Structures are given as structure tokens and as C-alpha cells.
Amino acid sequence: MTYFKDLEALEAHIESTQKGSLLITYRNLPDYAGMVLGIGIIFDVPAKKYQLDLEWISFGLDLYAENLLVGYLYQFDSLKNLAGYLQVTFQIAITEIPVKYKIDSELFPNPFKDAGREKEFEDCWQRFVGDFNTGMYVDHSLELVYTSKWT
Image 1 (cartoon, rainbow, N blue to C red):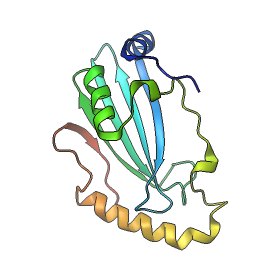
Image 2: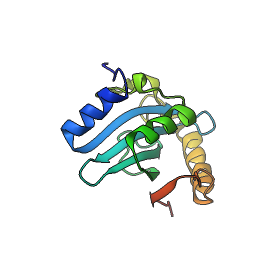
Image 3: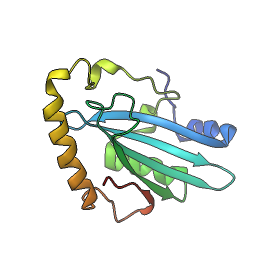
Image 4: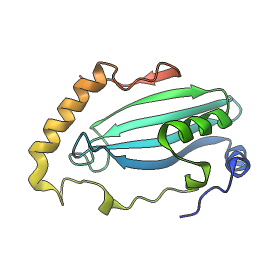
């Protein structure tokens, strides 16, 4: 994978694209078997929109993240501030942001290779949804512009 070398390179890429998104990473959630956290950036340069996209997904039950996911979008006033938040909160440096993310599916759960863990994954998904719906994962220091809720 190719990564951005610094903030200026990330800004230049976003400026040249104008509108779009960057998937930064997926991370397994140790407290919720079968689940991952997707971290990305959504941007719209003309609208001065720089958003952190967080999606919690049950890859163990929903391999293509079509149905079992919830998330938040947070608005930042600049790409620099968003990048700083990524560094402090998720320990993701700009030099660790890929120009184009490529998933290594062997690193994550899926309903085919982990078929025997379906009940465990279902229980963890239900527990996570309960935690998510209580607002447990909201960062109140940020401007939340969208939240999904699982019912």
C-alpha cells in the first residue's frame, strides 16, 4: 500500500479530488467478537466539509457491511484538526493513512471461515448495539453531524 508522506500530501490529494472519501482502516474490536471499527474521512472541499466517519460493523455476520452496521459522522473545521484527532484518539499518523485502502480479509472475521462462531458473533452484536444505543461511544467534545441507531 502507498501512504501519504505528510499533511501537505493528504491535503493536495483531497484538494485535487474535491469531493469523496478515504477509508483509513478497519480494526478488530477485542470486546466484541466478530466486529470491526471502520475509520474513514469524508470530504467536500467547496463546502469545507471534513468529516470523520466511524462505522462499527459485524463482519462476522455481515461480510460486506450491507446490513449490520452503525456509525457516527463528526464534523471538523479543518483537515489538520481531523488528522490531529486521528493521531491522538486512534494513534493513526498521517504516514499511516493509505492513498487507497486494501483490505486483507484474513485479518478479520467472516461468516464463512468463522461459521462455527455465529452464536458468539450474534451475542456480541446484540451487546454492542445496546452499548451503542446508550451513547457509550459518542465523543461529546466533537460536532456530531450524523448518528445511526439500530432498533
